[in-house]
Image (tube, rainbow, N blue to C red; front, side):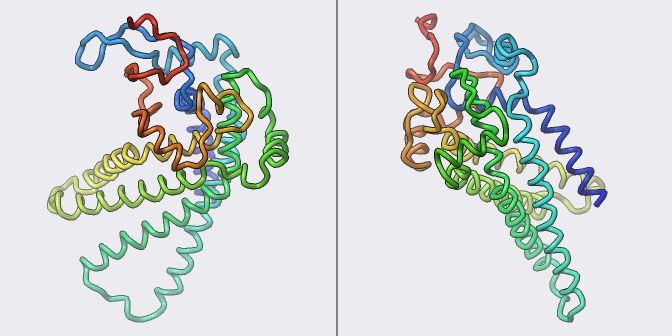
Length: 303
């Protein structure tokens, strides 16, 4: 019980601290660029024309809505985080209770290599079920969070309160409206989890020397590196999910010219891939100006 409470408190704290970052990221993902490109330098020191980064973008939002405006959508996101942590913990607790029952029976002696590989599959499968259950239950709050952020673009007030947002979505879109963008989000989480754990197992088993004194530290680092690598590869699923969650919902940010009207998440994926925008919003600091008229901002200074 104490562990669950500490996880909820820690998660809530991180959510509050990261809210301005997510706010900026979501607005960039939908293609909203209110500030013109500027001349800057890339990581190699070369002068390039780039779009404003996180801090300039956040300063622009604060200049319009104040610093408090940077925390728009925090309430449903906190609800999502707390509920997700509880559901995730309950599912894993159920599996742990099943393990205690199995340990009472015979036939648990296996080869060490087999146990190690089977344990990875077993733990990954359980983590996948726990994450999927948490995502399924908390996705309505995720949709409300995204829409309350995106309405900054058109200065709407359609999704202001949590209860009002729930009523609005149900009245206009029905139950399915609460699960807009769910499929790509689930697929991204599942692929990222399996990719991360599989790569970490291969690295820890075949690339690291078990005789090294800092073996445990090396394994933890490899898990972090593979997790970062997996999240980079599955980022397009996050982007597509967020775009589908706000698409054609009655907000300016989910309608042309910021976003086309997609018929499905696959249509969204294909169009982004065709435009070369699959990584839009992935970087918040070194943001190069994309080719073509993708953003709704004045790019005449590039000529």
